[in-house]
Length: 181
Image (cartoon, rainbow, N blue to C red; front, side, top):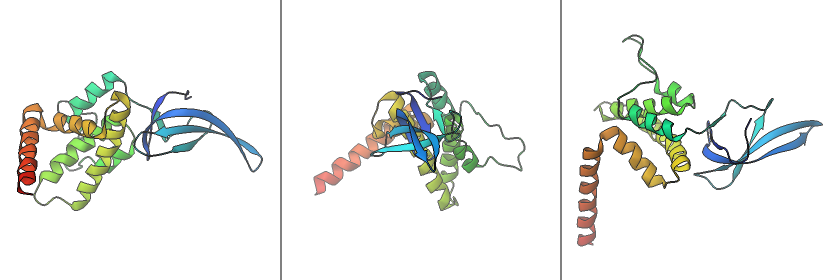
């Protein structure tokens, strides 16, 4: 069961905070809903409950979970092992699981696939979607901005030194373009 103030993640809408538990009468039946105030979107969503649960909503990770997410993004740990070389891991399945650790592994996998020259464009869209799911959760848990959450993901994947060099290169490029304007 969910309580007001719980930090939660919806499978499709991302992270938010439980704002209330409501009952509504629909066609004579009394139904329960969880009202969630979303992190990355304006407004609330109502999620139907059945016997106090919903498969599309879970509690957000803890601070310890964030450390584990960083290890997975860095490639130091896996949550889904490759069973045989002929059957690769399907990143869509990992993302659709709504498990933050599987989503982190999908981001790691998709980042590697996108770097390949003949990468399918659909991988880029899938990577973007997965990053936004994890970003909304990090924003909520750590109380940080979208840019900071994305930076945390990038730093975890690419390592601090490489991330800092890339950031410095971007700042120089921006400064140079401002100087030409």
